[in-house]
Length: 314
Image (cartoon, rainbow, N blue to C red; front, side, top):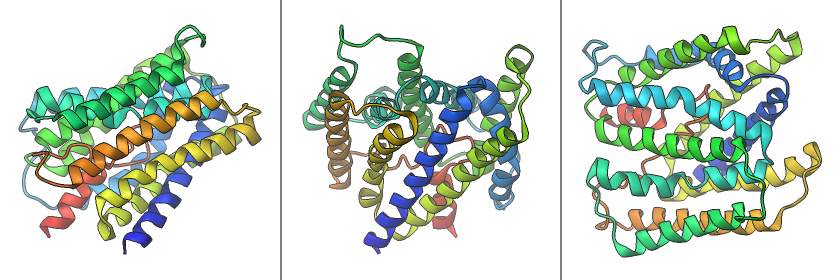
C-alpha cells in the first residue's frame, strides 16, 4: 500500500506542477491578486463540497478567534505571493525556496507549540538554510520581489500549518476552512479596482484549470495519506523540482541552473531528514512537519489534515 500511496502522491504533485505552469503563463498578463481572486472564486463550489460533509454539531464561532483570524489572513496572501514568484522567477528556483517550509515549521513550532527541537533537527535546519544561500548565491544573483515573494510564501505556509497544528483539534473543520476562504475573497476583492484587467475566454479557462487541478490533486493527496504512511508520502513533494526543471527548459527556455539544483538538493535532504527524525518517534511531541499535508498556495486545494482527522473520528 505504501508503494501505491507513493505513486499516487507522485501523480498528485505532477498535477500540482502543471497547475504552477498555468499560473506562470497567466501571471505574465494578470496580477497575482486577480489570479488568486478568480481561481478561488471558481474553486469555491468544489471546496464547498468538502465543507458540507462536516456534520459535527456546533456553530461557526471560532474557539480561538485570534489564531483562526491570523491563520485566515495568512492563507489569503500566501497564494498571491507564490503566484508572483512563479510569474517572475524560474520554476526550479521558486520550488527550491518553497521547499524551506518544513525547516520553518520546525523553527516556528518551538515558540508556538513549545516543541523541543534537538541538536540533529536543528543542524538539519541550519544545513537547509545553507542550501538557500547556495540557491541565492549572495552577490551572484540579482534579487527582486520574486525572491522575497517566494520566501514569504514559504514562511506563511509554515506559519498557517503550525497554527493548524495548535488549534485544529479543537476547532470544527468547517471553521478552519470557511474563514480563510472568506478572508481570501475579501482581501483579494479589495484589490480588484486597482489591478483588474479584462481577460479573454482562454484565460478564463486557464483560471478554471488552476482551480480544478488544485482540487483534484489535493483529493489524490488525501487518498495517498489515507492508504500510506505519512513518512513515505511526504517526501514525494520534492518530485516537483524534476517537473520544474523539465517544464522550465521545454516551455519557458530556462537554462538548467546547477547551483539552484545543488541548493535544492541540500534543502530537500534536510527536509527529508526532519521527516524521518519525526517519524522515528520519541523525539517530537507534535511531529509538526510530518503532519503538514496541505500545499498551502493552491487556491483550489483544501486542508488535508482536517479531512483526515474527520475520517479518523468516524
